[in-house]
Amino acid sequence: MNTHKGECHCKKIQFTFKAPASVSITICNCSICNTSGFQHVFIPHEDFTLLSGESFLKSYRFGSRKAQHMFCTECGVKSFYQPRSHPDKYSINYRCIKKGTLSIQNTIKFDGKNWEKNINSLKSKV
Image 1 (cartoon, rainbow, N blue to C red):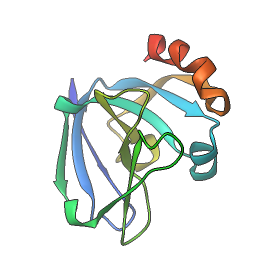
Image 2 (image 1 turned 120 degrees about the vertical axis):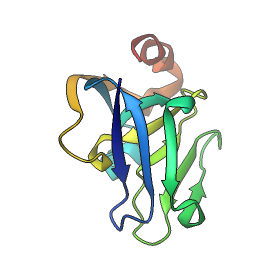
Image 3 (image 1 turned 45 degrees about the vertical axis):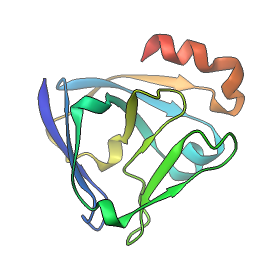
């Protein structure tokens, strides 16, 4: 396990997390992931540490209101959030991880437009 760093665009939100050097990323086509270009890296809560910016985090919920989409109030970037699919993990945006320590092992395509029908297949892969 390596320690990786991530941040939002303005660097107000900064965090570290532990993960292997190579991970799977998940690409979802739901309305919010598709619009924002979010690329999911699922990390257990205990392997994630928020270093700074808690006061800049704003929560956005929609639909089932179970997912807690956290974005920076300064720059608007969602660098990580609490997904409803994995209540014991955070989803970190691969695009917000500092380059050089983490590579993509494989890409999982998830049909989030049909979330209820497909969620069990995603849980078995991640």
